[in-house]
Length: 427
Figure 1 (cartoon, rainbow, N blue to C red):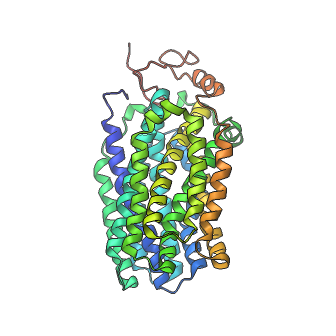
Figure 2: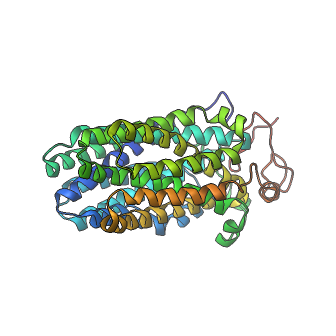
Figure 3: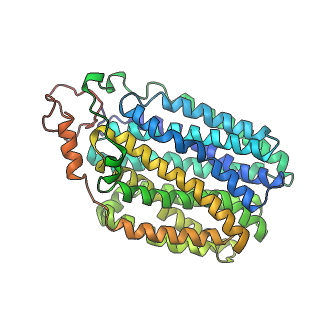
């Protein structure tokens, strides 16, 4: 069970996520550079980047259903293997079609890992711990986003066809290191026996829960901003004459600012509250994204990206908590999977749309589009619930989430994990 002094599982999960995310963050710009070397234009780069999210669109909800009624841990090594294979095989692919295929495999692996990991955090965290634990969990993503682009920028040189392939192979090897942190990450007794599992909650019922759609939109906006920054800043750099190594450092600076944000997330929440913090950071991120479209000198662009990274650091962990606390207790993994489905829809639509806009209005125009999306998410964030929804608490009680018989009051002891699936210690 999770207590304040027993979070070794969370540290190991953060380490594994850091390596897995570093592989993906290293591979995504490398895929863009390799596609350019193979003759792709801005539209083709957008299509290849979008396929990364295509396969996961069809897998997210079934994986979430499976995780609601089973273990989380098997998805983690499966995801790492698919990520590593997708990175390495992208490096040896000789055509844009093959690159798109292996980019999709990489995206499927990332989805498997993230669904398993987010579900594990939700299960092993009490409600009052979720903002903090999701914030710490996403530090792993930020660490990966910090190291990955810098490593890609350091490896990719003038011979983009060869050096981008080397970067992709290195990303595959680095991602596999995540396997070393995944032993005994989930307790076997954390899964309910089949007779104790609740009825399947319809997808429509999950989406109608107050707070779930808002959390999904905020997550899509924030992830789209991060995704297009990663995929299109190299294209912007090519057009503005910025060296690939500098582009990698700029992306890493954005990720470092996101880490800084998540390290101070708890005091920020105490100061402003979840609703106000989401609203303010989405609004500021909208303005900063639009600023990337301006022909700024590199130092000013670095300042904008650092500020943008700090603002984008809030949306992902708090949208996870919003969705988990709003969803019925028996469908939290499915709700997280629906959130990820929304993310992947954004990752399919946003790069493809960005490619079309870039082809017509220039490579900086997609960042203005992101500014509009983040502005809409700020309007939604102001109406998000700031705590567990009453229907979610009632569903916890109906599911027998407490230590007593089925239907008793849910366990909310301040030092207890409050996990839906974890066995309770006798008190």
